[in-house]
Image 1 (spheres, one colour):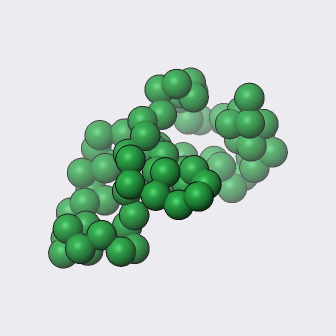
Image 2: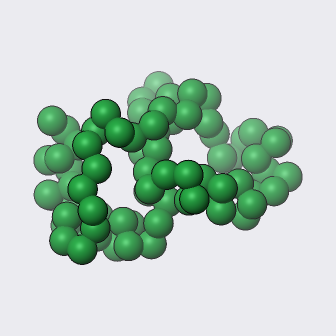
Length: 78
């Protein structure tokens, strides 16, 4: 992706059961939790639903993903 360091898929951590919408521990300090996640990783995955959810935590990664949707999608489908 342009302007964003590349990360291999096996470097994207899985946070088992992470659900930002229903977990009371997360909801009590939502902003603080997102700050902690942003500092620890550019992206992470969650298996809290029947499908893997991917979270991009940093602004540059999110905007690059929108700008380069097909490139990002192809990278993560490998």
